[in-house]
Amino acid sequence: MTVEPLVIVKDLVKNYGQTQAVKQLNFSIQPGELFGLIGPDGAGKTTTFHILGGIMNATAGEVLTIGKKPRDVRLQIGYLTQQFSLYQDLSIEENLRYVAGIREVPPGEFEERANKYLRAMDLLRFRDRLAGKLSGGMKQKLALCCALMASPKLLLLDEPTTGVDPVSRREFWDLLATVTGDGVTVAVATPYLDEAERCSRLILMHEGEIQEMGSVAELKAGLRMKRLEVRGSGLQSLEEKLWSIPNVSEKIQDIQAFGDRLDVLTSTAAETETLVKVAQPDVSIEIQEPTLENVFVNRLKGKVHVDHETRYPFVEKPSQPAGAEAIAANHIFKTFGDFRAVNDVSLSVQYGEIYGLLGANGAGKTTTIKMLCGLIQPTGGDMVLCGAKSNLRSAALRERLGYMSQKFTLYDDLTILENLEFYCGVYQVQDRLKNERINWVLANSGLKGQENMLTGRLPGGWKQRLSFGAAVMHQPEVLFLDEPTSGVDPLARREMWRMIREFASDGTAVLVTTHFLEEAEHCSQLGFMVAGELVAEGSPSGIKQSQPGQLLEIRFSNQQGAYELLRTTLESWRVSVFADSLHIVVDNPDIELPKIIDVARAAGIEVVEARPLPFSLEDSFISIVKRAASGNSSTEKAA
Image (cartoon, rainbow, N blue to C red; front, side, top):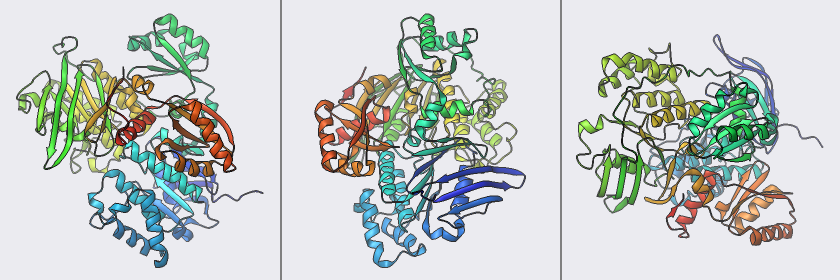
C-alpha cells in the first residue's frame, strides 16, 4: 500500500529581488520520517523552511503540506526557528501556556501535554524557573516543548542545537526519535554532520539547489571511496610529501589534518596505503568508511570559493625552548559564595599545542578560561601564563594574548572595517602591518568588498569568522577560543581550523572550548570537565581507545519498539537512534549482547544485524560524563 507523502515540493523557486535564494527544488517527506537538510551558510535551508511553515509564499512552484498549502494548515505545523522566541521574563510553564493559547490547545489537554514533554526533557522540576535563567541547552529544550504543544503533524527545526552542549544535544535528538515514534514528521536543518547521521534521509543544498539526496548510507556509498586514518609523527610534512607526488590527485581526493592524525580520502585504498607507507614508513594506517563530512566537502569542493592565497603576515618572534609551558594551572579552584564552580583543576599547554577543554553547560569551562587568561582571580591555586607566574593581569601581558569569547564581542553598530581598525588600535598593531592584516581578515572571512557593511547585519557564522580574525590581529603568543565555531557551517569550520593550526605551527599556544566533538579531533590534547573537575585528559585517539566496554550498532525488526524497550532495561544514555539502527554502549558485549537479543525477542522484536563500532569522541564524552556523574569513574588519563 502506497503512503502519500506528508510534504510535497515541486519546482520550488524563491526570489528576493534579483537574488534567487531557492532554485527548482523537488523533494518529498514521508509521514513519520526524520528528514535532514544540510548545506553551507546561504544554501537556502531557512528560506525553504519558511515556505514549508507557511511563513512566506513561494515565487513559483508548488508546496503541499498535509495535502494543503502550508499557510492553510499552520496550526498543524510546529516550527523552531534559529532565533527561538521564548519570553525571558516568563517561567517555563508560562511560556508553555502562552504558546498553547496561541495554538488553540484545548485547556483540558494542556496539563497532560506539558507534563509529558517537560518530563521527557527533564524540565519538570524547573517549571517555575524564568526562561531567562535557563542555560542554552535548557532554553532549546523548552523551545522544542513549545513547538510540540499543538501536537503538530509536521515539526520544522532550523539549527535547533547550535550552542547546546553534547549531552543536551544527545538528549535532544533522542527525544526527536521518540517524537517520530509518536507519528510526528520531523524536518531538521543542522550544521553538525554528526547529527545529520541520525536522519533517515538527507538533502545536501548549495546556493538554493539540491546537490545530493538519499539516506546516510546511500550518500556515503555514492562516494565510492575509503578513508585512511594515518597516525604517527611528522604528519604535517607527510601531508606535504603526499601532495607533491606527481598525479597524486588521481588517487587522493582529500587530506584533512586533525590533532593526532591525517584523514586521507581515496578511491584506491590499497595503492594509497602503499604511497603513504613509502612517504613515511613509521606511521600506522586504519582503513575506515567515509564520513558524512567527506561527502559534504567532496560534493561542494570547487563550488565554494576559499581564499588560500592570502596568508597571515606572520612576523618573526623569539622562539620558545622545547617543552616550555605557555599556559598552566596547578590545583586552581574558584568559588562564588557557597558554590564551587571550578574544583582542583590542573592542566598544561605548551607553545605550539592546541588544547581542547570540553564539558557540558555549567561544567566550569568558561570560568576556567577566564581564570587562565587573567579576567577573573582564582580563589586558590597557582597559574602560568606566557611563562609568567605573577602579575598575570598586567597590561603588558595581556597584549600577548588573543581572546575570542563565547558571546560575539565586536560592535554591531560599527562597520566591518571600523571594527577591525578599532581592534588594531586596541592590540597596538604596528602601522606597517595594519593594512596587510585587515586584508587577511577580510579575505579569510569571505568579506572582501563588504568592508562598509554594518557588522550587525552579518549572519552568525560570518560574525564568528570575523570575530576570530579580530582576535588574532596582533599575532598573539597565547590564544583563547571559547566556542569559536558555534553556528558555522562545515566548510567554514574547516577553514577556521586550518587557520588555528597555522597559528599553532608558528608557535602560538591555543586553548579552545567547543560543543562540537568532531572538531575536537583537531586538538592535540583534550581535557573533559564535569561539575568543575577535570575527569579525563589525553589525546583524541587515546581518550577513545581508553573507553571501557564496546559500542554496538544494532538493527532491529521494530526499531522504535526496541528503542523504547531498551531505554527501560539499560541506562538511557547507553541507547541512541542513528538513522535505521540503534547505537548501544555495553560494558561486556559477550554477556550483554545475548541478553539484549533475548529481551528484544521476548517482546517480539528480532535483531537483524549487530556489529561493533569504534567509539567516536562524542560517544566517549557522554560515557565519561555519565559515568562520572553516577560515581562510576574516577579521573582518567589517556595516552
